[in-house]
Image 1 (cartoon, one colour):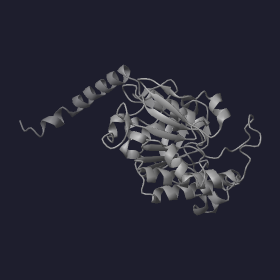
Image 2 (cartoon, helix red, strand yellow):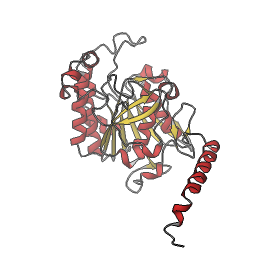
Image 3 (cartoon, one colour):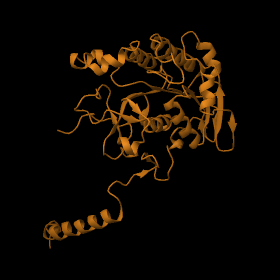
Image 4 (cartoon, one colour):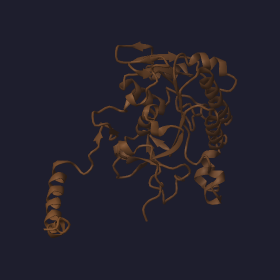
Amino acid sequence: GNSWTAPQVSRRQTLAGAGAAAVTAALEKPAFAERLDEYGRAVLPDGRLSKTESLQICDQVSCFLDKPKVFVAGSTGELGRRAVLDMLRTGMSIYCGVRDEGRMYEVQYKNRSSSKYEMTVIQDALIEGGREQALEEQLCDASVVVDVAGARFGLDILRLGSGLDNTEPERCDLQGTKALADAAKAKGVKKFIYVSAVLVNAKNLGEEVSQSDVYKNWNNFGDVLDKKLEAEEYIKQSGLDYTIIRPVPMTNDFPKDVGGLYFAKPDSLLLQDGDVGKKVSRDDVGLAIVDAIFNPKASRGTFELTGVPNAPPTPREEWWEPKSGKKAT
């Protein structure tokens, strides 16, 4: 018989067979096949947090266990601590930039060295304008810089008066970030990761966004969002390989309680009702920072991050592939 007609004859049987196979497969594995860690984050099938072998620069820079050394600005903050912990778990050598000695003792940072990881505390690492040369020295032999040193917003119970200084966004978020980028460039750093925020570009997105209470209330603190946008632009023009991460407002709740991590295009998460999510776990943002070091898809891009309530996290092979940020209507 003609080989072209044969498939037509058995099409129904083929579909029935495929249906049975699909049912069997579904019973054998959960609908969401990603491996999750104890926080509810998508990790690699072997349990690792990132494919560290994707970044091959150890022939050019000082490395530890075949991984570049990383300087973290803002390492004692709520986000910085999580990112540092994930890097140490990944077996890395980290320079922890610290500006507040009291905070350093609170989070129990001290110089630690083992065959599996290294932590070196860099004190007085003030991320401020005019400190380019001091910062250049403080970067040591790091070839990756992670900047999570944003001004603290809100009342910190243990530090009355901190976080209420309206000049801090200009000094830290803008001039400090520029100084750190200049130091990184002068030092020949290979990768600069900056954590910014959603809504930084609100003034260019029409009145519905620029006049929204959520933008005005947030930016009211020393024009912090405007300063972050200016810092982003400076990094993009610097010639450094960068990743800019813009989270929605962050929470200390675990990802499994907040919702699965989602990557959105720039200027798409506006904290409005049509958005897929309005908050994100710091544990997810910390993991994204670690992956941005190694994942080529994160290179020279700006990504907005949110958790999506009751949704599974984005599968790892789809990370850094930003989507619309809008709920399906």
